[in-house]
Amino acid sequence: MQQVPIHINFIGAIIFIGIFFGFFVSYFLIKKSLQNKSPNLFMGFLLLVLSLIMLEGWFNYTGYIFQVLWLTNFSEPLNFVIAPLIYLFMTSQLGDERGRKDGLHFIPFLLWLGYCMFFFTQLEVFKYNDNIRVMQLGIAEISTSEAYAGDPLSIRNYVNIGTIIHIFVYNIILTRRLLIETKKEGVSFFKTTNKALKYLRNSFYHFLIVMVILILVKSNFESDVGDYLIFLYLSFMIFMTAYQIMNDSNYFNQVSNFLEGPVLKYKKSSLEEDNKKIILEAIKDQMQNKKYFTSGTASLSGLAKSINQSSHHVSQVINEKLEMTFFELLASYRVEEAKIILKTDLGKKLTIEEVAERVGYNSKSAFNTAFKKFNSQTPSAFRDL
Image 1 (tube, rainbow, N blue to C red):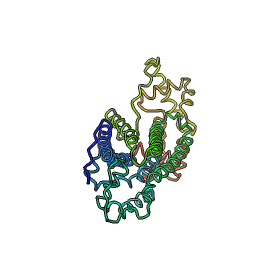
Image 2: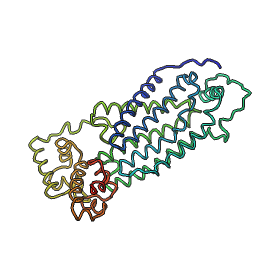
Image 3: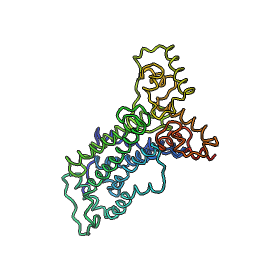
Image 4: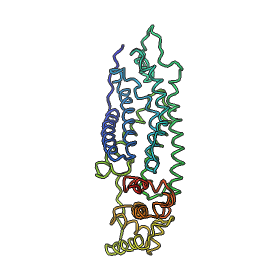
């Protein structure tokens, strides 16, 4: 076999650093999530999968793959794990219970993994030729008298199309799900201030971007030549995620997301400290005494109107004085009220949907999500204690 030179440049270095941070972040996400059974476990595995795919891409880009031919295409089946992990992460954050049926999402991965075994068990000469061909190095392939049996159905060339379709279908499902959820909460998908929904929306945007880049790359480059463009964007996402972790000690205990950098809010606000205290007391009065949170149509603008203040100032006070968003404040009061109801004789007779309605929620899934966030258990489990 002809010796293929190693190709190291700035792009290769960036991708390698991205891979390193990807493994680093995924390790801590998985470790922390296993302790508290957080939905972020799926985000941790997603980062791990993306890092493994990038690692193979880095081997190909630099030429190191010819030093470890046995690793050729080792991450190919993982293409069919990306979309299911995104789906499970996002729907878990929206309150879906996880069960055995979740394994059905990974059937395409298992099927392709099984089919790839035909290729994985081939002689290294075939893997050498495969890399020469897909990387378009202009080096003559090695002739061999051995019969190639790595693709008995001649379908491996369609793996990129299959990946795009797979991700596209899941994106459609998630788009519909997020739109339904934001409608239930009475907020706009594009302008929501709900921290959880905003994080999920922003993460979803970036996965859409990855899909668009994937389509553009595969449409304009033959084989795997342009994959480094995808890996550069993924590296950027991973760098920003690592940046968040270094600037937020509570990162692992909240909704994980990509590219949600720190924002300097209200920097130019003219609201005086005394006025902030007045607004804060008015907010507490509405929540504690008048139980504004029990309204199914409760909103930031509605709360602001009830105390004759602007929505901007009310939001500022909640963020600065209570260190939470309006929807987090709303959820905290609703959950506390639900805990009181669930422990009463009446609460033990009510369905979870009825309890949810009594505290202001229009959907059981939103109620379960909020309750689990504050208590690490479902309302039903809390009631049965």
